[in-house]
Length: 330
Ligand SMILES: Nc1ncnc2c1ncn2[C@@H]1O[C@H](COP(=O)(O)OP(=O)(O)O)[C@@H](O)[C@H]1O
Ligand SMILES: [Mg+2]
Image (cartoon, rainbow, N blue to C red; front, side, top):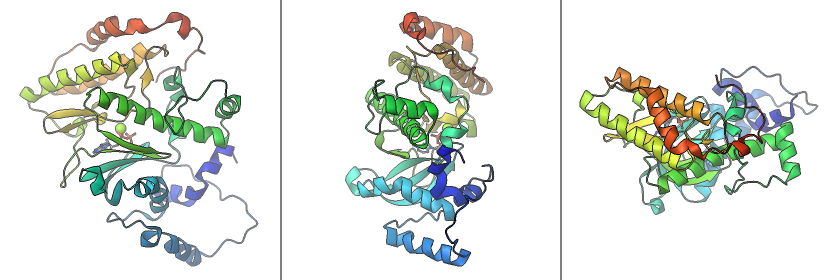
């Protein structure tokens, strides 16, 4: 068995049921007596639900419950949320839940994004995004390159290294949202980060979560100003030496006439990633493709070149030369 599989152990059974696309795993050989099914279920019942302090209106699937409880516990413990109301979406890398916020937060609902246990192994080409990025600790600080034990574990993908990479991935999303929110960008307000998830402003109301742009068509008079607004947000990211890295109509929510950008774990450091311009171009192309369908004509290459001329000059060739050749973008 690969060492990184150890991380999934508590969710081994759930992963087949709740994540049907995951490859079937052989049960690990064990000399321990396996309890018969009925016994296993009653053990689970003893430690879940109200007894574990999680009164959730939302009824999770059987194995989702364990994962959800483990992932959301810090937010309960910190008195940030008091209930889980519904699953907003089960995405490819994460699931998002609408939670009732603790009154002390001053808001009614919060969105909890919880990463799938295997997400960092499913990621396409994550090496492209990691180039030039520091490894972030759970406190959101960059790990020291001189921490050889840590760097070796990450490089060799040991179970500990995989956990470090996972935490770093979550913290990149969270710290990016903090920076962008502080800069006035249209992103959900971040509230807290934990080992396996982030808690942020819920975009929507009691009836529904905000739709993503790909789910809706826009009236022409709305489409053009919204397109401009999104370009301004992309520029704001560039001013912070960042590119989104996975921007598309799927990762832009539309609510009360405004566009809100989400889904930042793969954010790219402009100054240290030699693929940054190609990644930016892809982000802008995808946005232009959606808006072309809404009747807005724009040339993605022209926009990219213009933005790159203004902000991409920050790329330092000497610094870039220090990195290994990056993997190809798909
Ligand atoms: N703050 C939020 N408020 C409301 N819905 C959200 C929020 N964040 C994410 N969502 C919903 O959850 C989906 C998945 O979230 P996302 O961050 O894009 O993760 P993934 O990596 O799974 O695509 C989004 O497409 C959106 O519909
Ligand atoms: Mg997404």
